Length: 158
View 1 (cartoon, rainbow, N blue to C red):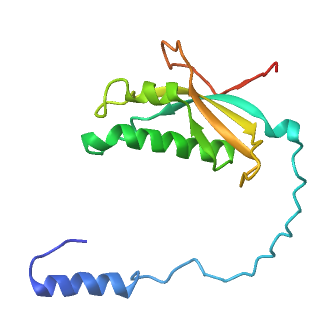
View 2: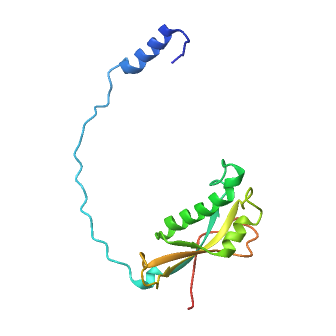
View 3: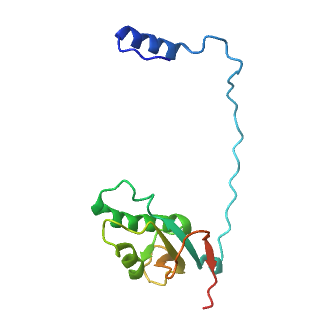
């Protein structure tokens, strides 16, 4: 389809778009009713499976790529919290001071491109807690290269 600057050309383009194909279509469109699945009631997980610790690598660079300088490190923290909420399924995420310092170590302009994070889902023992679980996000120290790292479930011996 060619474009022209003249008004007549614009009308021609519109006519081609709205007219449809110049040949009859082989495919017939039919509307079928699909049977809906019955929802199974989910059995609640035991408390033993609720408490878990995993180590993830978060690619922060793609999450803060097109931001102005002064918003990069705060956005990186927000993205870590968002990642933890999605991966652990809990809205209450607490960022450890060590993780906060690791993100802010090079200033507001240049947070690390990738960061290795340990996410611990724990029981909330507070009296007036809205949720029974929370996630503690902390940094994994001593990572020299991120190549080949996978998500790892950490076994707790507590």
